[in-house]
Image 1 (cartoon, one colour):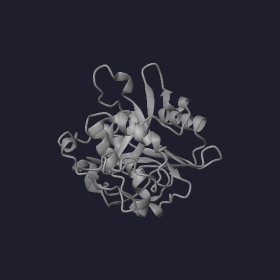
Image 2 (cartoon, rainbow, N blue to C red):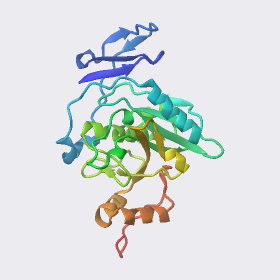
Image 3 (cartoon, helix red, strand yellow):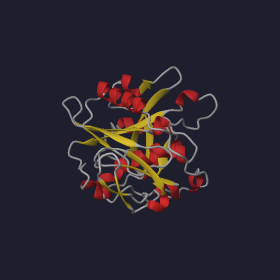
Length: 277
């Protein structure tokens, strides 16, 4: 395992051995003083036995593809609006995941967060599904959601960004794939993402707040990137999907007008009653 991080001043990327964690250094490009970060603690997702047993050894990151990233950025700005900030990842394994932030604007009065980096490597898809090998993820947050670096010290503010990064890395970390209708619990049994919510899992759907043309970005004749929305779920909604199927869950989410715009106060669309779901 190696530690991959960037200079906060000039964005130069570095890759060092794990035993360098905590060491001080100087950026060779701009002279900025650096501290090699410690790797992030393993996510609760690794507490899922079915996935933990399939975890792959850490592998060298693919070379940075600036043209690829620029195509994603251009695609976002064409269909969703101008990017005002990119949350760069300081420590990376498998792929380097950044999160692009598009601020609220008149036609989209909320933040939109979209990953880049998940599509740097193909996912391990079933035979015949090669067109689904490349993907990126997105979700939306209310305009008043705290999004400064200081705010991120509180997991109640940071968990949506963490969720995007964990899910974007999951296919490469566990040699699997994610696509529309796939759901992922937060550990087993599912745990709430943070103390301010009962959401404990997520399902991927086509983006519901975005124009249809946003859903696919054609890179070349061999590669197209599919964009999926991450919709957080309550425990009962996760159970509905497992017991009754994806169509039943989508019908309930659609009836509740649920989209990838996170609403901590939204109605639980599958709350149990005397009559079941």
